[in-house]
Length: 198
Image 1 (cartoon, rainbow, N blue to C red):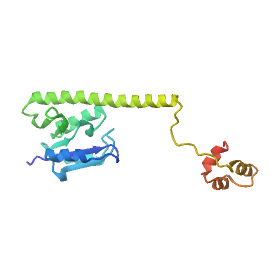
Image 2 (image 1 turned 60 degrees about the vertical axis):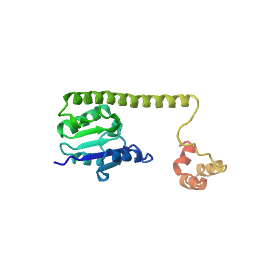
Image 3 (image 1 turned 30 degrees about the vertical axis):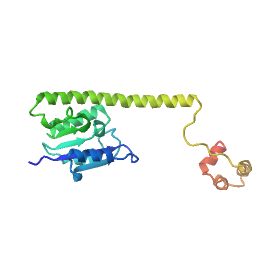
Image 4 (image 1 turned 90 degrees about the vertical axis):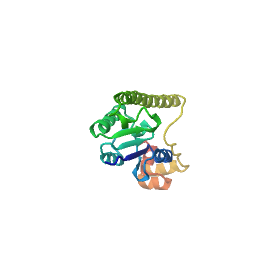
């Protein structure tokens, strides 16, 4: 049976470049046609390319990732997925930036290595989850502090044109409709209605 290396590259947004991860996987020995690239958040495992790749894993194959957070960001979900791949499917996982600690390829020969890998996984997943929660708290605190300083978020309000009052009077007297008033002012009807307090 031929053991295959499957590489998984994930970027959370389209603005991020996958190049560094791809180069690392190539250098590790993952064939170019076995590298799967996905541009989706790691908040869960509802990722089509990832799911398709995992379903192709056979016992003895190895899923290779650059770092643990490329697999996912939810601690419990990552631990469950790790167990599914390594225990239920009989495939292996290699986390390149945590070698040799997170490399399950020799788990059968060395029960201590398998135990250490599971332990390190739990600790790292905890740290990743804690960092994610801290980042969220920091962002919320930063937004609250900015609001306290008077910083306004969202789009800048559209300024009313000089002719607004005249057109509003036409609308209030029934001479023109709200849509016609909005067109004359160069704004949407909802914006015009907001301006007149309706």
